[in-house]
Image (cartoon, rainbow, N blue to C red; front, top):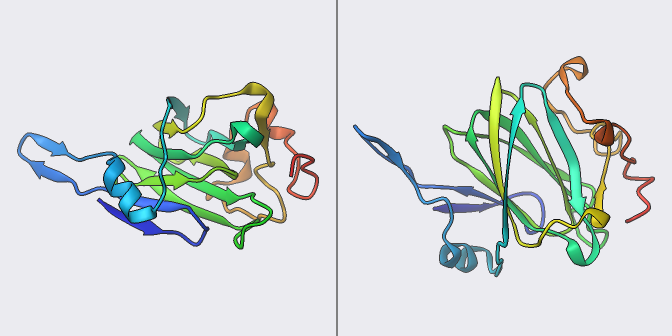
Length: 182
């Protein structure tokens, strides 16, 4: 497995080594030892989540705050998404910056998103099955987020606005400047 630093402090792109033959393919999705040796991080994943999303579904930009903050390792099982991580740690050199990458079932890339980061994705294929591992349990009272079209972040979601499918909750998230939890 190849692990690459991104432009965001503590955020890594994982590229597995895929073995293919006439039967299909095989790859290791995570190896704690390799991850720790390469990143210097000791992460204990305690919860796995999965979503199935239609074309244009935009989920985000979400995070858990405070003691319930979560680091995540995300990947696509089927389909393709544009995945976005946003550094929301005020004391970070990459605060307010974002990183985006296409994750799909062909490249099998994964993105490690540290605690204190916002996360979102938009489905680019007809449907996508998206999986993520979290190092802390979900805690509803610690939910927070930033509006997907925040002018300061200026994220290009690579789809026209009229194609985006958003939950009512995601449509009323605050901007980065108005987030009272920062």
